[in-house]
Image (cartoon, rainbow, N blue to C red; front, side):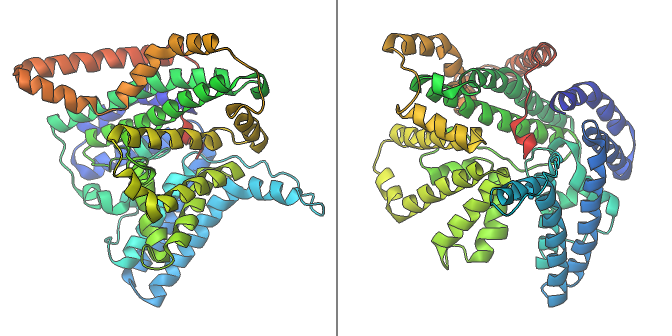
Length: 467
């Protein structure tokens, strides 16, 4: 599905764009996008298009009825129906095998593994449809009268399988009327190519290096090797996911939609609290508005609410105890920061605060990478020197030096260098035309290199497709 989806974007996107711009009126353009979106989703998993349509029908009906009876017991009933049906489907497909395996660990259970495959993107579009029903009930979203406009909201292919999580209220007006400009198309294509380059030129290479160090026999590795593999994975997951988000936002802009931002240089964060305001921002805002605040937020049992939200955040990422541990790990840190650590961090230099945050995030991704708990324990043993092979200081230095140029690229690209470059160019008073031509040339080169990488490289995993 990953390679196929990239092939779809590069081969069929020009056809989709051509048809989209040729047909007149918003209704016809919406029809082109719905057809392209269903084709995109069916490219890898045709049968699960039915599930996406079922989810759309459920929330089109429940959301409409909840909106017509907003803030009433009758309206709340339709919200409950939506939650039961949507979360029931999500639970069956995503957590069915997990529950069976855990039950079978008990001596009196022997349930056959259902072998359920996870429909790609189900976690993302389920949250989107739920947000519509809840917002309609709260009176924050207008009831959508057209099922096809609602289906477009749910199925829109740029952000369908890996986000960002677009709420109905983000684009409800744009579903009915939107402006498409040459400037918007240029900015959208530029953003798309930047995301494609992040994915193919940086994330893929970082991932291939991480696999070398983390997918073998861990106990035969040394501590520096496992830590370095984890460092590469930390860069891989950022450039992979933020790259996909850039691609989705760029395509949305090309079609006249404005999708919410999903990343804001998270590896420059000054605390873990700050990190989670910068990383996967649409997921964080979803749990804040639909789970944390309804539980009481900061007003009542705040610490309990934090732990509940982060346990759910961990489970959202995958059906594994490792993800639960990963979520609770960050919950503990966030609670400690709220109690006293944020005040301590404020007195520290910015670079030390950034290193503190990055180190904790890097260690946390250990639970994220190893979904098998046994391998996770092995990795921890090696990382802290209680197991694994020994490695000399000279060997470790040679390993680091050999990858130093690539790590330097990852660090630079994780920083807001674009702002710095634009500020420098303004001070140099380079003519606007020259700057635009140089930017267009860079984008063209990045696209050619990315396309060549896709053709020549069989390693193209989108990490968040599996969520």
